[in-house]
Length: 124
Image (cartoon, rainbow, N blue to C red; front, side, top):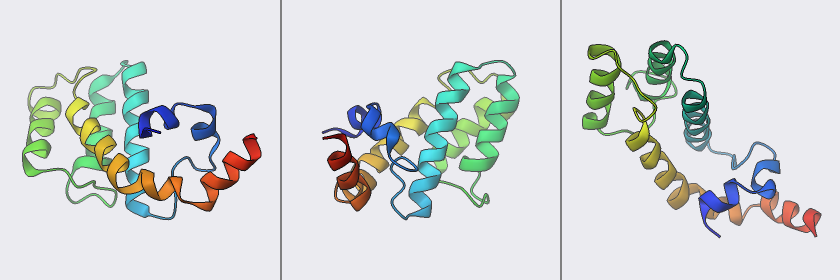
């Protein structure tokens, strides 16, 4: 199974806390991903929302800062704060980076976790 296909299923959505299997960084990655999905759906006040997401997950000094490259941080900063023109695709590259991290680091752990095994048994 792929990360995106499982995360979109009822099984993936019904996991207590989603793919949260005891790792704070994984939790922050998931929260960022969920924020981006909501951001795209409600583009009202996009600049405010984009700034909030940046300050929470992208700014290197944030408690919940994810491991983005300096280049990624600068590109996002410029688009959100300098150009003041965030769009629905502002966070696309950052989101893809986070999805890849979750797919490679955390999804295999989730598949092997008691949470996942319990959900599979419960669905049978």
